[in-house]
Length: 202
Image (spheres, rainbow, N blue to C red):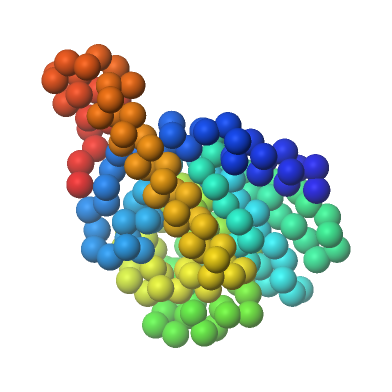
């Protein structure tokens, strides 16, 4: 529990979210597509994935964070942080399923298939971290409308999904407000147009 408490406290109390998500307002259609873009542009995400049955996982909670960390809470109560190597290997397997059309994340009836839990790789891709660490998968996943619907099944509860959506949206809005106030650079019009967030558009 020490790992979980440490990272959760940091994500909740340090106000890092104001610095972590860009001013991008989302260019793709639908709220799901906009959320995926917001998460992909986040600097990081702290995600807690819980094993709900043997080999089945769901996202318990997540917040914008300084860097991406995925904490795995196992059935036996033990917790550990996934390594980059573990995440890369899991996502390679998921990419293969996406490429050959067998991933439940991209199928029309995927939400029903995954209602009892996902594979660990699927849960990562359903989470905010998926749009960050799995960004190299590209439009094969994040541009798929089925994914936007199915990923909700990857959360332990509807409230967990809503909390995630709201926390990343709030962080984006906070950053946009800071940009407008000139917090990230000169208050001159040229700085506002070409400053830290100037390269992003909707």
